Image (cartoon, rainbow, N blue to C red; front, top):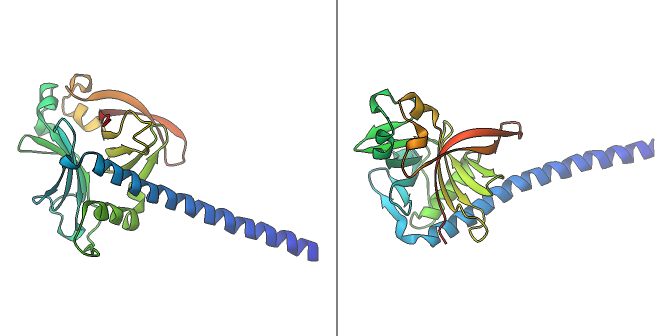
Length: 227
C-alpha cells in the first residue's frame, strides 16, 4: 500500500511538472517574441511612427507598400487593434473589384486594410506609452493572438481571417525578417489573380492546424530581408 501511494504521488507530481513545463513553454514563446520584436523595431527605427488616425504605432515595410499597425489603447482604437494596411494599386491591376470585397477587408483612400479588434480595455503604462510596451500588452492580455510559426522560425500576430504579421525569431539566420501574410480567398473572390500582384508572392506555406498537425495553406506574401 505504501509503495502504491508512492507511485501515485510520483505520477501526480509528474503531471504537475508537465503542466508547469507546458505553461513555461507558452511563456517562453511570449517572452521571446517580445525580444525578437524589439530587435525588429531597432533594426528599422526610421520605419516606426505613431499613427494618430488609428491610435497606434505603425511599422512600415522598406518599400513603403505595406505597414503593420498595433493599438496604443484598445478603448480608443477607431477600427482595429492590430491591422495591416497596404497599397491597393497592385491588387487592382491584378483584377480586384473593390466593390466585391467582403469580410474584414476594407478599401479606402487607395489602401486596403485587414485586421481585428482584440478587446475594449483601457491600457495603462509605466510612464509614457511606447511601441514595445504596447506589443507587450498583446502578449500579456491577448496571448492567443501571438503565435510561433515553426516552419519559418517566425513569431507572429494573428490578424484574423488567415491574415498574419510575422517577424524572424533570429534575423541573423533568417532571410525573411519581416513578413506580411494575407489570406488570398477574399481577394480571389473579388476578381484578383493572386499570381499577378506586383510586389507580392502567391505561394503555399506549411503551418500547424488547431491540433498541431502540419497543413498546407495558400498565402499572398510580402517578405523582406533586413540585412
